[in-house]
Amino acid sequence: MESAAARGASPRLLLLRRLATLLAIGLAHYVLLWQGEILTVYAILGLLILLPSSWLPRWAVAGLSAALLVTSLLIGGFYAMVPALFLLGSALVRYGVIGRIDRSTRVPALLAAAFAAGAAPALWVQASGAPAGPVVRLASVVAGLLLAGVYVCLVLLLLRSPLRPALQAVFAPLGRMALTNYLTATLLVLAGVTSSAAGRATGPPRRSS
Image (cartoon, rainbow, N blue to C red):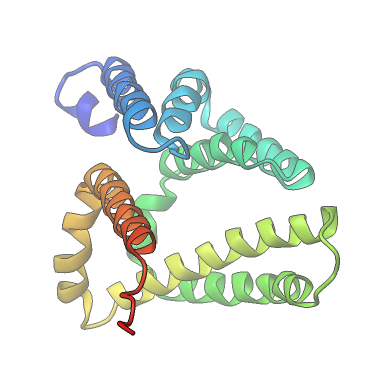
């Protein structure tokens, strides 16, 4: 949206067009290939949550993100977490955090340590073999979020190292091809499932008597 505004284009119209296109691709993906897909959810929640939030002040976006994140953790709902993370990303951009985070080594290191310390008890609950229930479900969600934060911080630290050119050469194209990678993964999974089913149908060769 910022780059669209810098070009003189309408950023909200651009976001609306992209979300509508994503919805069309998601519906086609759902109908033709894979019913467990997520693009449709992203597009609908983007239209209902992310686009309207662009008219709100950044403090309101951050507050809504925190409220939705707490709610999703308490109810264990994945779909409630999607808009929470959408709004969190928007707030981080609008507060300038994303623009500054690449210039620091200490902050990602401290965050990685904090996220790892928070994930440890959640992982312990998961590994304890306790019966499935609200506590285990909450621990699973918290562990997933915090570990994702650890991974992101570690990548940021690696980007501050001499490995930066190699990492950028590998990950920058992947980042620009996220939708292509997602759809290609479906085709690869379906090809693997078809191949496995065909192998089971054929069965092992029979030995002659």
